[in-house]
Image (cartoon, rainbow, N blue to C red; front, side, top):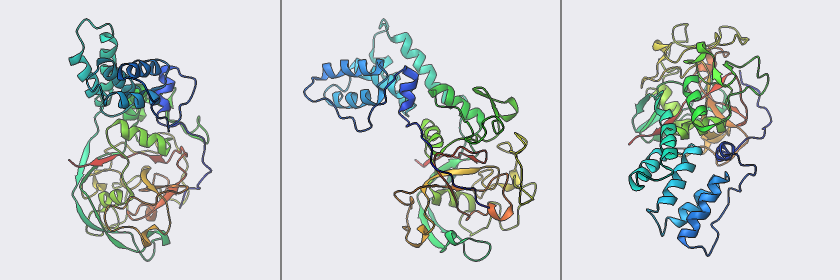
Length: 369
């Protein structure tokens, strides 16, 4: 059963978070270039004014240029820390700590910078848990019934070592992200009232440990970036789900059961609010070979890759990252509303990146150090 792919909707670029938080009224072009002919000090003042006006994207470009000549300038480091925090960029805490060590105790902006430092700590309030997936080869894809045409041909793929989320991102974690960055709330693009498990800007108490839903691909990518991670590639996702022994499901080759996955026993399953979803550690017997929960059922999970039904015919043998462009992004794992065959680890699916649906959520990944 494949979700219907819907036309793309307008979405907000990641750097617009800064503009919204700082009260800007005008979007900045992503291809902004530094203004030529300015001294480092003048450029620092320009960047500070841009940040005050909500132009964090442009300010960061000017900061990077000015730091070539003034790497330890107090004003530049302060502006960099402000904009990194407001844009939800990794490294903001380190930048602010650098400024606090550099600036005198009597600096008039010290209180504001300490408030921003507190904001960067929101990410650690509900820490992510990770499982390690070692480097090496595995057999990707499937052939023959019940596999679909886009799952073949089966082929050997080698991926680097990486970490993947032990659980799908929860509403509690996504709420911390929204509070820290001002990112838009999760909202269903069909019926926001019927399909919401949030009340206003806060998840229902019963939904805190349920997977975050009603998030687009951009929302998912922004959350993972805020957590100093990223979305997994399709190849990474499949290896994390099935390991190296060619198993059909994360737990092995036995069909799904009520103690292994949250899925539908019937061809049609209707939304029943929070009761349709499973908590992050509910299905211990359904864990993947590396210890990841709910990689089959519960909610589909966004991956990095654009979707191409014929990609496996020409994909590289090492660390494939999918086509360079497309109309839909790959989602993996099945959901609460799918039947057993759809939960197979090799099953591929797709959705338009702007879609915010009640059956799609997030799992992050990052390179292993």
